[in-house]
Image (cartoon, rainbow, N blue to C red; front, side, top):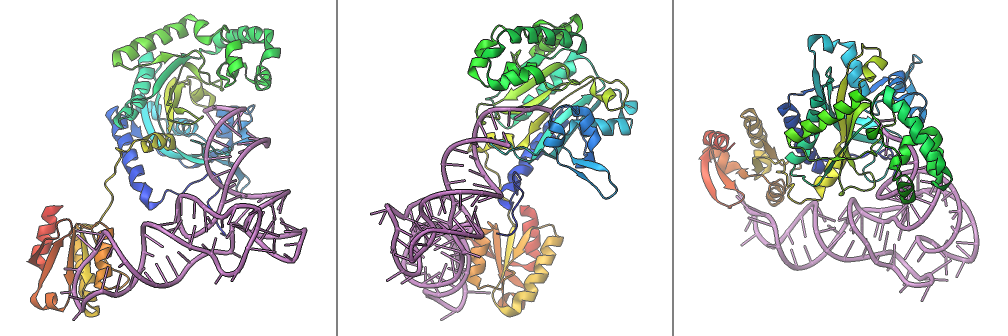
Length: 419
RNA sequence: GUGUCCAUAGUUCAGCUGGUUAGAACGCCAGGUUGUGGCCCUGGAGGUCGAGGGUUCAAGUCCCUCUGGACACCCCA
């Protein structure tokens, strides 16, 4: 085969789009229930936007982003996530001046050049929300509640909300030293991967998948036990708010974030029904990002979730039957001469807002009936010499097989009433 | 980036230790009373056996490389 979709990308075929539309619609409804408004940003941005937000040090930049140079020599990047783009738009359009608290949501493709595996593609789709301009822990709780509400709307109950606090620059730096000191004592017993992490990102050792690492770090200090007064208070108030909102959660001190702009609340929603990549949602507070990207210091909190992962969970339950798109009426022609009348009737139906289909391949009547059945048309009319002469049609209801005679005018009225 | 497994019709798969024109089911097309679908019956189309090299008298079947897929590690914005 000459052309194939790029590694790690997928076509969403006509048989699948109905489900996607339904899922998107449910996400929108829930977002709007919480009064978040949709924002759409371009698929590509200046590379430096992401380099800046992610931090040039990590090997994400350059290694896992789709970056390219355009003809004017500018380095551009297909967005690997939405938050940076949303914040860029927030700053660029001074959204904070119109509204002290900006609440936006998105559904968007994103691109990362990683090795594909279960729940991981190179072009994937994210939905998420950001609340920009508020520092109160109740907003963090709302974001968590909103993300959980979306899964509940789909009837998914089997997920875990795990919360943690990653502190702020003040308490986190102190904590990092303490952690490093602790881990260095057992460094020779850690996995090779974790020994490397001790240099690059010691907090990641806490969520290592190596069982032995987990045992070795069972008494390691956790950020949540080393918070400054302000962060500690925020974390307590968050839990209070979650209790009021009736959100089931567990505190998991091993949830970490790799980037410095994250502050205080960090949370994940995970599912056992996914593979190794078991996170449905990742989110939290990022009070330092707006300023980092050139805006004025503005607190913000948000979440991002994977569409494909949501669909993976949905596909495991059979109750997700979607009503397939189908024409209301199929107009068959009995003979070659009547084809013109079929065309004009189809146009008349569509003008009247009645979804209709005809046979474009000039097949036999039998084949047309088969086609009407396959298309799941509710009704079929056959137009031939007789019908044209008498100005009537026989309307067949496919489900029952019943047929009755109508004039062309009555046909439109009948079907309009059936809409 | 690393590892394991995999790659045959549109789809799901069969093809034994290498041996004549590569099969099945479903799907698709056409017929089975000349103006009526589903079920059933009959027939048909459709495959450079992922690509390229090699071993052999002979390769879908063995070997190598590449590409792609699945899963895990890594990474995780």
